[in-house]
Length: 412
Image (cartoon, rainbow, N blue to C red; front, top):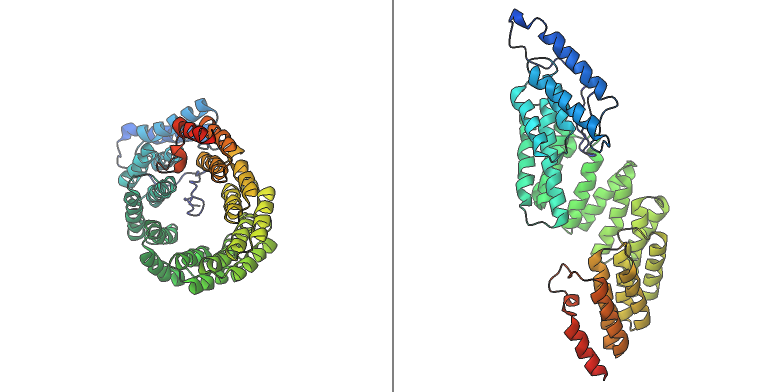
Protein backbone atom coordinates (compact mmCIF):
# COMPACT_ATOMS: atom_id res chain seq x y z
CA UNK A 1 0.00 0.00 0.00
CA UNK A 2 1.42 3.35 -0.97
CA UNK A 3 2.39 5.70 1.85
CA UNK A 4 2.27 9.47 1.46
CA UNK A 5 2.33 12.72 3.34
CA UNK A 6 -1.03 13.72 4.78
CA UNK A 7 -1.75 17.44 4.33
CA UNK A 8 -3.56 18.05 7.62
CA UNK A 9 -0.83 16.76 9.90
CA UNK A 10 2.10 17.32 7.56
CA UNK A 11 3.94 14.16 8.62
CA UNK A 12 6.07 12.14 6.24
CA UNK A 13 5.24 8.53 7.08
CA UNK A 14 8.07 6.02 6.79
CA UNK A 15 7.49 3.27 4.24
CA UNK A 16 7.68 -0.24 5.55
CA UNK A 17 8.13 -2.18 2.36
CA UNK A 18 9.74 -2.07 -1.04
CA UNK A 19 8.16 -1.50 -4.44
CA UNK A 20 9.10 -2.46 -7.97
CA UNK A 21 10.20 1.10 -8.75
CA UNK A 22 13.78 1.06 -9.94
CA UNK A 23 14.73 1.15 -13.57
CA UNK A 24 16.91 -1.71 -14.79
CA UNK A 25 19.25 -0.24 -17.38
CA UNK A 26 21.90 -2.91 -17.80
CA UNK A 27 21.90 -6.57 -18.81
CA UNK A 28 25.65 -7.00 -18.36
CA UNK A 29 26.21 -10.51 -16.93
CA UNK A 30 29.10 -9.16 -14.81
CA UNK A 31 26.38 -7.78 -12.58
CA UNK A 32 25.25 -11.27 -11.65
CA UNK A 33 25.32 -10.44 -7.93
CA UNK A 34 24.32 -6.79 -8.29
CA UNK A 35 20.68 -7.30 -7.42
CA UNK A 36 21.39 -9.87 -4.72
CA UNK A 37 23.76 -7.38 -3.11
CA UNK A 38 21.18 -4.63 -3.44
CA UNK A 39 18.62 -6.84 -1.72
CA UNK A 40 21.08 -7.52 1.09
CA UNK A 41 21.87 -3.81 1.48
CA UNK A 42 18.16 -3.01 1.65
CA UNK A 43 17.57 -5.80 4.16
CA UNK A 44 20.38 -4.45 6.34
CA UNK A 45 19.03 -0.91 6.39
CA UNK A 46 15.55 -2.22 7.22
CA UNK A 47 17.01 -3.99 10.25
CA UNK A 48 18.88 -0.85 11.33
CA UNK A 49 15.76 1.26 10.88
CA UNK A 50 13.53 -0.92 13.04
CA UNK A 51 11.73 0.69 14.80
CA UNK A 52 11.70 3.51 12.22
CA UNK A 53 13.72 6.58 13.10
CA UNK A 54 12.02 9.87 13.85
CA UNK A 55 13.48 13.34 13.40
CA UNK A 56 13.96 13.67 17.15
CA UNK A 57 15.86 10.36 17.48
CA UNK A 58 18.02 10.73 20.63
CA UNK A 59 20.62 8.15 19.54
CA UNK A 60 22.87 10.20 17.25
CA UNK A 61 25.04 7.18 16.44
CA UNK A 62 22.04 5.14 15.25
CA UNK A 63 20.77 8.12 13.28
CA UNK A 64 24.07 8.43 11.42
CA UNK A 65 24.23 4.69 10.70
CA UNK A 66 20.71 4.53 9.30
CA UNK A 67 21.18 7.59 7.12
CA UNK A 68 24.49 6.24 5.81
CA UNK A 69 22.91 2.85 5.08
CA UNK A 70 20.10 4.41 3.03
CA UNK A 71 22.61 6.48 1.08
CA UNK A 72 24.71 3.38 0.40
CA UNK A 73 21.72 1.70 -1.21
CA UNK A 74 21.02 4.37 -3.82
CA UNK A 75 24.66 5.35 -4.34
CA UNK A 76 25.87 1.78 -4.89
CA UNK A 77 22.76 0.32 -6.51
CA UNK A 78 21.08 3.15 -8.45
CA UNK A 79 19.46 0.69 -10.90
CA UNK A 80 17.97 -1.57 -8.25
CA UNK A 81 14.34 -1.62 -7.27
CA UNK A 82 15.27 -0.17 -3.87
CA UNK A 83 17.07 2.99 -5.04
CA UNK A 84 14.10 5.36 -5.07
CA UNK A 85 12.80 3.93 -1.79
CA UNK A 86 16.18 4.59 -0.19
CA UNK A 87 16.29 8.17 -1.45
CA UNK A 88 12.79 8.82 -0.14
CA UNK A 89 13.51 7.23 3.22
CA UNK A 90 16.69 9.26 3.71
CA UNK A 91 14.97 12.50 2.71
CA UNK A 92 12.19 11.69 5.17
CA UNK A 93 14.74 11.46 7.97
CA UNK A 94 16.00 15.00 7.44
CA UNK A 95 14.31 18.15 8.66
CA UNK A 96 11.42 18.99 6.36
CA UNK A 97 12.91 22.40 5.52
CA UNK A 98 16.44 21.07 5.05
CA UNK A 99 17.83 21.87 1.60
CA UNK A 100 19.48 18.44 1.55
CA UNK A 101 16.03 16.88 1.90
CA UNK A 102 14.76 19.03 -0.97
CA UNK A 103 17.74 17.98 -3.10
CA UNK A 104 17.04 14.30 -2.42
CA UNK A 105 13.36 14.62 -3.24
CA UNK A 106 14.26 16.41 -6.49
CA UNK A 107 16.77 13.67 -7.27
CA UNK A 108 14.04 11.07 -6.94
CA UNK A 109 11.67 13.08 -9.16
CA UNK A 110 14.31 13.63 -11.85
CA UNK A 111 16.03 10.22 -11.82
CA UNK A 112 12.97 8.05 -11.20
CA UNK A 113 10.04 9.90 -12.80
CA UNK A 114 8.00 6.68 -13.02
CA UNK A 115 8.42 5.92 -9.33
CA UNK A 116 5.29 5.69 -7.23
CA UNK A 117 7.14 7.97 -4.82
CA UNK A 118 7.70 10.78 -7.33
CA UNK A 119 4.41 12.50 -6.53
CA UNK A 120 5.06 12.03 -2.79
CA UNK A 121 8.43 13.71 -3.21
CA UNK A 122 6.98 16.63 -5.13
CA UNK A 123 4.29 17.00 -2.48
CA UNK A 124 6.93 16.92 0.27
CA UNK A 125 8.76 19.90 -1.22
CA UNK A 126 5.51 21.75 -1.85
CA UNK A 127 4.08 21.31 1.65
CA UNK A 128 7.44 22.19 3.21
CA UNK A 129 7.53 25.43 1.21
CA UNK A 130 3.98 26.22 2.33
CA UNK A 131 4.88 25.58 5.98
CA UNK A 132 7.95 27.80 5.73
CA UNK A 133 5.74 30.63 4.47
CA UNK A 134 3.27 30.06 7.31
CA UNK A 135 6.07 30.11 9.89
CA UNK A 136 7.62 33.27 8.42
CA UNK A 137 4.22 34.95 8.64
CA UNK A 138 4.01 34.14 12.36
CA UNK A 139 7.48 35.47 13.12
CA UNK A 140 6.95 38.70 11.18
CA UNK A 141 10.14 38.26 9.21
CA UNK A 142 11.10 40.62 6.39
CA UNK A 143 11.83 37.70 4.08
CA UNK A 144 9.68 37.34 0.99
CA UNK A 145 6.86 35.15 2.22
CA UNK A 146 5.14 35.17 -1.15
CA UNK A 147 8.15 33.50 -2.76
CA UNK A 148 7.57 30.38 -0.65
CA UNK A 149 3.83 30.40 -1.27
CA UNK A 150 4.47 30.77 -5.00
CA UNK A 151 6.94 27.88 -5.01
CA UNK A 152 4.41 25.71 -3.19
CA UNK A 153 1.69 26.76 -5.64
CA UNK A 154 3.80 25.86 -8.65
CA UNK A 155 4.61 22.43 -7.23
CA UNK A 156 1.03 21.62 -6.20
CA UNK A 157 -0.16 22.55 -9.69
CA UNK A 158 2.66 20.54 -11.26
CA UNK A 159 1.67 17.50 -9.21
CA UNK A 160 -1.95 17.79 -10.34
CA UNK A 161 -0.91 18.09 -13.99
CA UNK A 162 1.87 15.47 -13.96
CA UNK A 163 0.27 12.79 -11.80
CA UNK A 164 -3.47 12.71 -12.55
CA UNK A 165 -5.17 10.20 -10.32
CA UNK A 166 -2.52 10.49 -7.61
CA UNK A 167 -3.73 9.83 -4.09
CA UNK A 168 -2.30 13.26 -3.27
CA UNK A 169 -4.26 15.12 -5.95
CA UNK A 170 -7.07 16.13 -3.61
CA UNK A 171 -4.60 17.43 -1.02
CA UNK A 172 -2.76 19.35 -3.73
CA UNK A 173 -6.01 20.94 -4.91
CA UNK A 174 -6.87 21.92 -1.34
CA UNK A 175 -3.43 23.36 -0.71
CA UNK A 176 -3.39 25.47 -3.86
CA UNK A 177 -6.36 27.31 -2.37
CA UNK A 178 -4.60 27.49 1.00
CA UNK A 179 -1.59 29.12 -0.65
CA UNK A 180 -3.78 31.87 -2.05
CA UNK A 181 -5.39 32.23 1.38
CA UNK A 182 -1.95 32.53 2.97
CA UNK A 183 -0.94 35.18 0.42
CA UNK A 184 -4.03 37.21 1.31
CA UNK A 185 -5.64 36.71 -2.11
CA UNK A 186 -9.00 35.99 -0.49
CA UNK A 187 -11.16 36.20 -3.62
CA UNK A 188 -8.93 33.79 -5.52
CA UNK A 189 -8.82 31.42 -2.54
CA UNK A 190 -12.61 31.55 -2.25
CA UNK A 191 -13.03 30.81 -5.94
CA UNK A 192 -10.61 27.88 -5.63
CA UNK A 193 -12.56 26.40 -2.72
CA UNK A 194 -15.85 26.90 -4.53
CA UNK A 195 -14.42 25.02 -7.51
CA UNK A 196 -13.33 21.97 -5.53
CA UNK A 197 -16.05 21.67 -2.88
CA UNK A 198 -18.41 19.84 -5.27
CA UNK A 199 -15.67 17.72 -6.79
CA UNK A 200 -14.51 16.73 -3.31
CA UNK A 201 -17.97 16.33 -1.82
CA UNK A 202 -17.18 12.76 -0.79
CA UNK A 203 -13.65 13.56 0.38
CA UNK A 204 -12.54 13.71 4.03
CA UNK A 205 -11.33 17.22 3.14
CA UNK A 206 -14.85 18.53 2.57
CA UNK A 207 -15.47 19.89 6.07
CA UNK A 208 -12.05 21.49 6.20
CA UNK A 209 -12.91 23.20 2.91
CA UNK A 210 -16.20 24.47 4.36
CA UNK A 211 -14.50 25.64 7.55
CA UNK A 212 -11.75 27.58 5.77
CA UNK A 213 -14.37 29.06 3.43
CA UNK A 214 -16.14 30.33 6.55
CA UNK A 215 -12.86 31.83 7.77
CA UNK A 216 -12.42 33.64 4.46
CA UNK A 217 -15.94 35.09 4.62
CA UNK A 218 -15.18 36.24 8.18
CA UNK A 219 -12.03 38.03 6.99
CA UNK A 220 -14.06 39.60 4.17
CA UNK A 221 -16.60 40.78 6.80
CA UNK A 222 -19.32 38.77 5.08
CA UNK A 223 -20.62 37.55 8.41
CA UNK A 224 -23.84 35.95 7.25
CA UNK A 225 -22.12 33.69 4.72
CA UNK A 226 -19.42 32.90 7.27
CA UNK A 227 -22.10 31.70 9.71
CA UNK A 228 -23.72 29.60 6.99
CA UNK A 229 -20.45 27.78 6.28
CA UNK A 230 -19.63 27.35 9.97
CA UNK A 231 -23.14 26.04 10.69
CA UNK A 232 -22.81 23.47 7.89
CA UNK A 233 -19.65 22.16 9.52
CA UNK A 234 -21.21 22.12 13.00
CA UNK A 235 -24.22 20.20 11.67
CA UNK A 236 -21.88 17.63 10.12
CA UNK A 237 -20.55 16.67 13.54
CA UNK A 238 -17.04 16.35 12.09
CA UNK A 239 -14.87 15.74 15.17
CA UNK A 240 -11.97 17.86 13.93
CA UNK A 241 -13.73 20.90 12.50
CA UNK A 242 -17.15 21.06 14.18
CA UNK A 243 -15.63 22.47 17.41
CA UNK A 244 -13.66 25.09 15.44
CA UNK A 245 -16.72 26.06 13.44
CA UNK A 246 -18.81 26.25 16.59
CA UNK A 247 -16.31 28.80 17.94
CA UNK A 248 -16.28 30.60 14.59
CA UNK A 249 -19.99 31.45 14.87
CA UNK A 250 -19.70 33.71 17.95
CA UNK A 251 -16.52 35.15 16.44
CA UNK A 252 -18.64 36.47 13.56
CA UNK A 253 -21.07 38.05 16.02
CA UNK A 254 -18.23 39.66 17.99
CA UNK A 255 -16.72 41.12 14.81
CA UNK A 256 -20.15 42.32 13.72
CA UNK A 257 -20.79 44.08 17.03
CA UNK A 258 -23.60 41.75 18.06
CA UNK A 259 -22.21 41.17 21.53
CA UNK A 260 -25.22 39.52 23.19
CA UNK A 261 -25.30 36.91 20.42
CA UNK A 262 -21.54 36.47 20.78
CA UNK A 263 -21.82 35.82 24.51
CA UNK A 264 -24.56 33.24 23.94
CA UNK A 265 -22.44 31.59 21.26
CA UNK A 266 -19.35 31.40 23.45
CA UNK A 267 -21.40 29.87 26.25
CA UNK A 268 -22.65 27.23 23.83
CA UNK A 269 -19.06 26.40 22.88
CA UNK A 270 -18.15 26.08 26.57
CA UNK A 271 -21.12 23.78 27.16
CA UNK A 272 -20.40 21.59 24.12
CA UNK A 273 -16.60 21.45 24.28
CA UNK A 274 -15.57 22.28 27.86
CA UNK A 275 -12.21 20.51 27.71
CA UNK A 276 -11.18 21.58 24.20
CA UNK A 277 -9.00 24.50 23.16
CA UNK A 278 -12.01 26.38 21.76
CA UNK A 279 -13.90 25.80 25.01
CA UNK A 280 -11.05 27.36 26.98
CA UNK A 281 -10.67 30.26 24.55
CA UNK A 282 -14.41 30.99 24.72
CA UNK A 283 -14.08 31.96 28.41
CA UNK A 284 -11.70 34.77 27.46
CA UNK A 285 -13.62 36.02 24.46
CA UNK A 286 -16.81 36.14 26.49
CA UNK A 287 -15.12 38.60 28.85
CA UNK A 288 -14.14 40.82 25.95
CA UNK A 289 -17.73 40.77 24.69
CA UNK A 290 -18.99 41.87 28.13
CA UNK A 291 -16.59 44.82 28.00
CA UNK A 292 -17.92 45.86 24.60
CA UNK A 293 -21.39 45.99 26.15
CA UNK A 294 -20.10 48.27 28.90
CA UNK A 295 -20.68 45.59 31.53
CA UNK A 296 -17.26 46.16 33.07
CA UNK A 297 -17.63 44.29 36.35
CA UNK A 298 -18.90 41.21 34.52
CA UNK A 299 -16.08 41.54 32.00
CA UNK A 300 -13.41 41.66 34.70
CA UNK A 301 -14.99 38.81 36.66
CA UNK A 302 -15.19 36.66 33.52
CA UNK A 303 -11.60 37.37 32.53
CA UNK A 304 -10.27 36.78 36.04
CA UNK A 305 -12.07 33.43 36.19
CA UNK A 306 -10.68 32.48 32.79
CA UNK A 307 -7.12 33.35 33.86
CA UNK A 308 -7.50 31.37 37.09
CA UNK A 309 -8.82 28.35 35.21
CA UNK A 310 -6.38 28.49 32.29
CA UNK A 311 -3.24 30.40 33.35
CA UNK A 312 -1.21 28.89 30.50
CA UNK A 313 -3.69 29.84 27.79
CA UNK A 314 -2.22 32.10 25.11
CA UNK A 315 -4.98 34.63 25.87
CA UNK A 316 -4.13 34.88 29.59
CA UNK A 317 -1.50 37.64 29.41
CA UNK A 318 -3.53 39.85 27.07
CA UNK A 319 -6.62 39.32 29.21
CA UNK A 320 -4.77 40.36 32.35
CA UNK A 321 -3.61 43.50 30.54
CA UNK A 322 -7.18 44.05 29.36
CA UNK A 323 -8.38 43.91 32.97
CA UNK A 324 -5.90 46.68 33.75
CA UNK A 325 -7.16 48.73 30.82
CA UNK A 326 -10.81 48.27 31.81
CA UNK A 327 -10.12 49.19 35.44
CA UNK A 328 -8.05 52.23 34.49
CA UNK A 329 -10.69 53.46 32.04
CA UNK A 330 -13.18 53.27 34.90
CA UNK A 331 -10.85 55.14 37.27
CA UNK A 332 -10.24 52.10 39.47
CA UNK A 333 -6.50 52.77 39.63
CA UNK A 334 -5.76 50.34 42.45
CA UNK A 335 -7.29 47.46 40.53
CA UNK A 336 -5.54 48.54 37.33
CA UNK A 337 -2.13 48.67 39.04
CA UNK A 338 -2.68 45.23 40.60
CA UNK A 339 -3.67 43.76 37.23
CA UNK A 340 -0.64 45.20 35.43
CA UNK A 341 1.73 44.12 38.19
CA UNK A 342 0.48 40.54 37.89
CA UNK A 343 1.51 40.56 34.25
CA UNK A 344 4.88 42.18 34.92
CA UNK A 345 5.77 39.66 37.63
CA UNK A 346 4.69 36.55 35.70
CA UNK A 347 7.82 35.15 34.05
CA UNK A 348 5.77 32.76 31.91
CA UNK A 349 4.39 35.72 29.94
CA UNK A 350 5.96 37.32 26.89
CA UNK A 351 8.81 39.76 27.66
CA UNK A 352 7.24 42.70 25.82
CA UNK A 353 3.87 42.19 27.52
CA UNK A 354 5.57 42.11 30.90
CA UNK A 355 7.64 45.18 30.09
CA UNK A 356 4.66 47.25 28.96
CA UNK A 357 2.71 46.18 32.04
CA UNK A 358 5.53 47.33 34.36
CA UNK A 359 5.64 50.62 32.47
CA UNK A 360 1.90 51.13 33.06
CA UNK A 361 2.31 50.52 36.79
CA UNK A 362 4.77 53.41 36.91
CA UNK A 363 2.72 55.53 34.53
CA UNK A 364 -0.48 55.21 36.58
CA UNK A 365 1.34 56.08 39.80
CA UNK A 366 2.84 59.09 38.07
CA UNK A 367 -0.53 60.25 36.74
CA UNK A 368 -2.22 60.05 40.16
CA UNK A 369 0.67 61.99 41.68
CA UNK A 370 2.27 59.21 43.74
CA UNK A 371 5.78 60.04 42.54
CA UNK A 372 7.52 57.88 45.14
CA UNK A 373 5.74 54.72 43.96
CA UNK A 374 6.20 55.77 40.32
CA UNK A 375 9.96 55.95 40.86
CA UNK A 376 9.96 52.50 42.48
CA UNK A 377 7.99 51.05 39.54
CA UNK A 378 10.21 52.70 36.93
CA UNK A 379 13.37 51.50 38.67
CA UNK A 380 11.93 48.01 38.63
CA UNK A 381 11.27 48.48 34.91
CA UNK A 382 14.92 49.36 34.29
CA UNK A 383 16.24 46.53 36.47
CA UNK A 384 13.96 43.70 35.33
CA UNK A 385 13.71 44.68 31.67
CA UNK A 386 17.17 45.76 30.47
CA UNK A 387 16.42 44.97 26.81
CA UNK A 388 14.26 47.48 24.91
CA UNK A 389 10.71 46.76 23.86
CA UNK A 390 10.70 45.38 20.31
CA UNK A 391 8.52 48.32 19.24
CA UNK A 392 11.10 51.07 19.13
CA UNK A 393 8.49 53.79 19.69
CA UNK A 394 7.02 52.13 22.78
CA UNK A 395 7.06 54.65 25.68
CA UNK A 396 8.67 52.13 28.02
CA UNK A 397 11.88 52.60 26.03
CA UNK A 398 11.95 56.27 27.13
CA UNK A 399 12.27 55.49 30.82
CA UNK A 400 15.94 56.09 31.55
CA UNK A 401 17.89 57.41 34.53
CA UNK A 402 17.38 61.02 33.52
CA UNK A 403 13.62 60.50 33.38
CA UNK A 404 13.67 59.09 36.92
CA UNK A 405 15.91 61.96 38.13
CA UNK A 406 13.44 64.48 36.73
CA UNK A 407 10.67 62.76 38.70
CA UNK A 408 12.75 62.98 41.86
CA UNK A 409 13.21 66.68 41.33
CA UNK A 410 9.43 67.10 41.02
CA UNK A 411 8.96 65.16 44.26
CA UNK A 412 11.24 67.59 46.05
